[in-house]
Image (cartoon, rainbow, N blue to C red; front, side, top):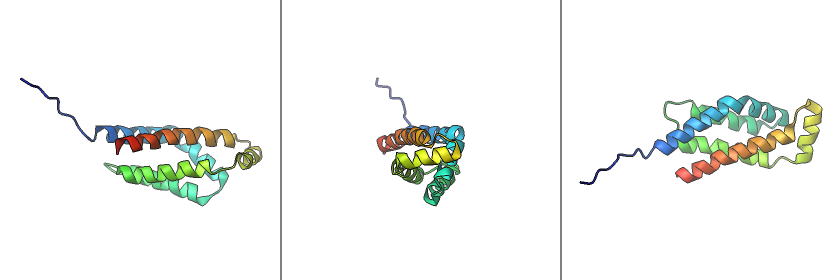
Length: 116
């Protein structure tokens, strides 16, 4: 007799949503500070959109992925020299923070691609 184990096809997406929420709980403040220092409203707007997309009973993956991608692209467009200037002005490791946050967001975005 063949036994099958029922699988939940939404489990990977649910795990990804949980990981994204966990990441923002742990590092969202630092990301917000970085976006605030860069002083470009589109970055903060995308972060607000991300929080809003996650603040539902069952977040929609597409609505979470879009602002994640937007923030990732926004950070990638920042010139290291400009980030260094901002870092000196604000006594903050802006270039390093942008690279770190960009890498973490890239990892999350890649996982969204793999669940689709």
